[in-house]
Image 1 (cartoon, rainbow, N blue to C red):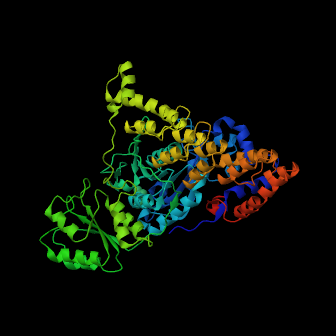
Image 2: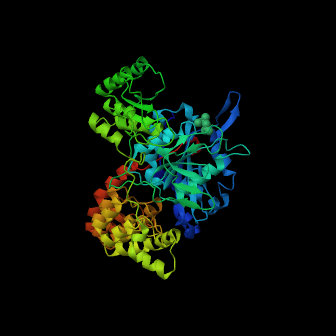
Image 3: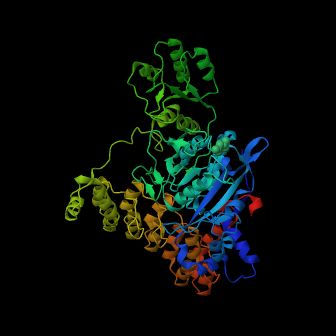
Length: 619
Ligand SMILES: NC(=O)C[C@H](N)C(=O)O
């Protein structure tokens, strides 16, 4: 298991640097902004968690093994993965306070992706990983969730499909991309797939809000719980047999937004790091003995994936075998029926399949064995649930891992009159052109509907296949607009449709910052409940705004910032905090209002404030 690294408060790290710097007048962040003001809105930050794997291995006497503390320095020398000139021009190292922060050259979509590498110790060949390592990754993502726009996990390919599946379940109400990648040949070798894979994963995690645990390999982005490793030597090592890739990256990024999974509730992100280890995979084979099955199902076994033939079949002329299975399910072992076939699903078509249902097995649809196993591990760790509730969860589609209830609801574009009229006037008729018109028009139409709170119009747009999460020409999504207007019901509706609270428009504004600006308290509360938070840059700017509200005695304005989760102790541009400004302006009531918040905030910032985990040696 990876060692716990020393947590460091990011905010404090910045402040300490400032205090020890010779140029104390300028906060490092502010000096950075002044020198790069036009590009900051286009920056995004990604945390790269390096767990090991071939990507960072070198050849030793005993064969390939991970090399510690080498990746950052070697990436720094690769111009496609680090732009040193930009880093210096924009005081990147001072601003992040971490030496293990790098920046990609500007992307085709004009984005600058700043990435920080957190290296585990020891680095592992993924064959050595256990559920404890999955838990550690979950913890580190949770700890750093609000500091980054996306996450990349460098991981060995051998067990990457297991880790990706497990994380997909552990990460509840995920609103940001988590992309696992690695390589078949070390990044240090002349010909390798590591560079492309890392670059692609960073570009996805830093540019698109795909709120899933994904796996990126050989130009394709897959849903993490749908993949399996199918090749030991090819660069094209993974496949997703029952679900098309979420994206293909060739000349351009082609994202299949219709397929992208999203949490459709209003709850905060959390990583459930407890996992149950009493689970196993049992593959049927002709002639398997009842005693083998009995031995496998003995306590402490609590959950088993039975890999059956074809569409979920087992011999129905083997009462001895079926009895062992029945005995185990009656004793409370959850057994999930998954097919040995790479493609296709479990169905009760054959008598040989029905007998397993009768023995109390749960149909695993088209789940991969990796997904079914890690789902069992996650579900069985939910000790607050009854056995029946756990079984129910196993049969449900939790993160898009099975096709059970994914079918249906594909809209028929040609049904919609409005688009048809436009298409006719433009003389188009083929499906692709119609779709292109729909995609170009619908974000603006959806924003217009959101402005007047017209849920019916949004429903109609959805029915014709429009994606209500997409932004218009300024990157403004219907959720931004609804938040500005204070349409609480509509905000709830859009969140239920999977709209992202993290979407940024071209000015860097999020639905939360919009709702704060227009003082829609209830909308702010709902967005916060769904996991919305200020970005680091917004936090830096908040200080000045708080001071000006304090100076004018605007308690209501201060209250809304507080509800939105702002740090009320943030200093303004001249280093003074809101409470100091209020004192100087003789605003007694504002001082009274701020005093308890100030005390509370300073306590929490000194204690359990946002922590940034990093390996001490790289600081
Ligand atoms: N290509 C790889 O990364 C394989 C390696 N054995 C691992 O899984 O860590």
